[in-house]
Structures are given as C-alpha cells and as structure tokens.
Length: 115
Image 1 (cartoon, rainbow, N blue to C red):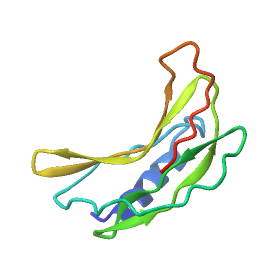
Image 2 (cartoon, one colour):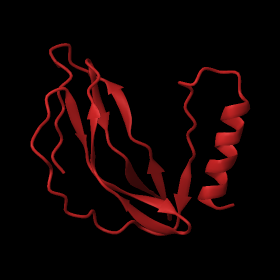
Image 3 (cartoon, rainbow, N blue to C red):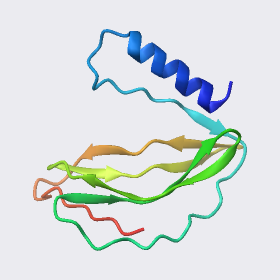
C-alpha cells in the first residue's frame, strides 16, 4: 500500500470518527533505504514566539522527498523534537516530530533550533 493511499485511508477513518478534531493519526514508516544526508538550510532570523523545526526527509511514493524547515508557534513548557529517521536493525524507522514537555522547570519554552 502506498503512503498516499495509507494517508487517504487514515483521513477517511478520521473524518468518520466521532472523536474531536484534535485527534492525531500516526503512521509508522519502516523502509530498507537510508535517508540521504540532510540538506543545508539557511535558518531565518529568530521570530519571537516561534520555534524553528528543521527540514527532514519524508518518504513519499517510494522515494525520499525533502520537507523544508518551518516555524512553529511555541508551546510554553514544551520543546520541539524534530522529525528524524532511526536505524533499527536492517530497517530505517521514521519518527514524527512532536512537542515534548520540558524536563527542567526553569525552561521557558524557547527552543530555537538551528538546522
């Protein structure tokens, strides 16, 4: 089943689901092809109230496709863990980016990652 077809099925299931719109669908991607080296991105000047999410390689239609970095509105008390690939045995597993609760109480929610 292609990634596009899986996403379509997930969207249809979500649309038919009575859960709130905030529900999240996670699709696991495990492939036998290593991602290419990350592309070099020029990170724009910091934006107050935003966190930089670096670009990453996604997997679409049987190939790696570069997804450019972007600004995300900050969530006080959280840090952004960016999308990335993990090597697991002979496979590569894609981990979605996610907000994670800051571990240190002195953390003020600012996490301006630079590519």
